[in-house]
Length: 446
Image (cartoon, rainbow, N blue to C red; front, top):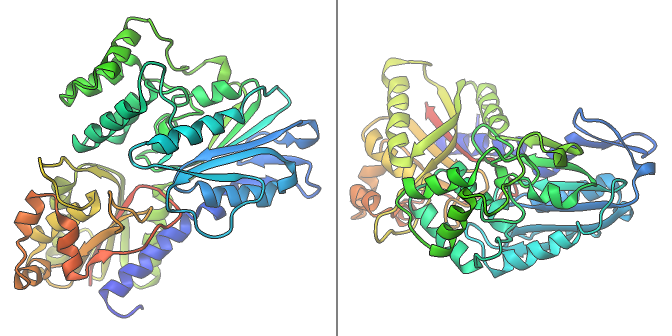
């Protein structure tokens, strides 16, 4: 067994991330037959490449670069007529593909780079016919990175709206419902641009339950949401600006703008969407590795949502139950949970992310409990607008902080978890992981 609680946690985190490596995931699901003629994605129908005139590879997301590398290695770059993927700025590392251009956009709020990159991406889809094949590589972050606003809404207005949606703690499905109805590419509209070409989308899910229409705002999937749904998201959270956005959505409700393509639309007849990696796979891998190390281990849920500090109290109660009553497992034990929480920011928030906030709230609930550890991780390695992947806490966290003059309650009230955990050396500094499948929390009792 690795030496010490934090070494064990590191081992489990590495096992989880390895299970959802984007390069490996593409290679598992996209394959050529022995003579290189037929291409198959998952269990979908084989594509006879001798009948394909052009292959186009496009994509967006935090994992788009390793996915592009894998696609090129499988297809052989000479087969690719046009290729472009959009990745998060600052995360271009390692060898670049030769036949697929890699460009950089902004996340979590789109900017001018995202707009220009998306215009270039959509130009690859112009003039395609029924004998062409489009391979689309999608992962978390794609909504911000692939941005092309509807006519009448300016990019700056989308930026403002994006910041307000995040600050209000709106869940990702609500955010993407709004995004889809302010975009020319989201909500199935990228597939419509590519038609009548055949489309195969390989998707790394960062959304609870992996709904195709929500991941990266579903550019290749039918959209069951409506303009009415989008407007209700804003109204529910008290968001009444920018005015151009509200005007566009209200006009859409009145039928003055075309809806996004819905289930059953013939534009999807030639589209295959395939999930190639998810939070569930990462969670199961962590639990499996824990069992190998001698822990009793369970995956309790991969569908956790809610306010981070509220979820934290539930997680702390679960860990306390294991530690004091041996339920549902006896020590040594590891409970694994996945999903994505939200944080409602105060008026002048400090620095942090949802996983750091969760760990800080949990630390307060775990104070004084011996031989436990909670690890809260964003699997992409970027928890909120910070360079940390999350944080870890135990029963001594609050006392150690107090000895340094830090007030845990004060930092929690100000959404200021990052400097709190930095002072304790309890940030998870994974760096960009190259993957993105939501958040994982490990509850360990030794």
